[in-house]
Image 1: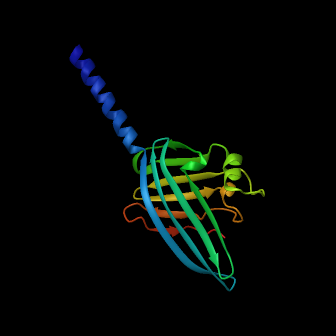
Image 2: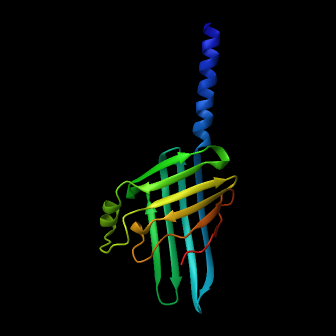
Image 3: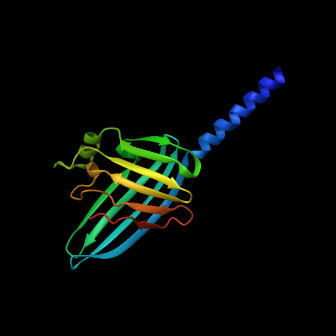
Amino acid sequence: MRHVFAATTALLLFFCAVTASAQTLSTRFACSQAGDDGGDPITYADSGEIDLDGTTVKTFRWESAIFRSTHGYDCNIDEEDGLKAEVRGEGSSAAWRVALKDGNAARLKRGYNFERGLNCTIRLERDGNTVRVKPTCPALCGSRINFSDIVIELDSGTCRYDPVNK
């Protein structure tokens, strides 16, 4: 009976370990893309580092910018903004929702004095070796409406815009 209990316990611990490791995401990325916005040259640039272990945000740093010939806008977020994470699914199809614990406190800390909204949600949807990043985060974007939608290739850390936010 003891052997059956020990084997069952070991098997249960193994599955817990597999599930925990299957809900991890670790990547560094950088990309840029030049374009045209009605005759005005525009450049999108994004870089960052994301390290999630289930619902634990170990590292989350993302800088997203739009540059025009006369001005630019940027958004940035990191774990010091007070982030929380939710996760669903496992392995190559896991998905996370990263959000601000307190959007107002994060805005005030950054010195933003005009309203763009207090919400901030960044969805990360893993599909095999890629992660689709879908941001809805006006709280930390100053004069810009939102971060760029990107798709990150996990092996190389390269990314592409999908679609380009304006």
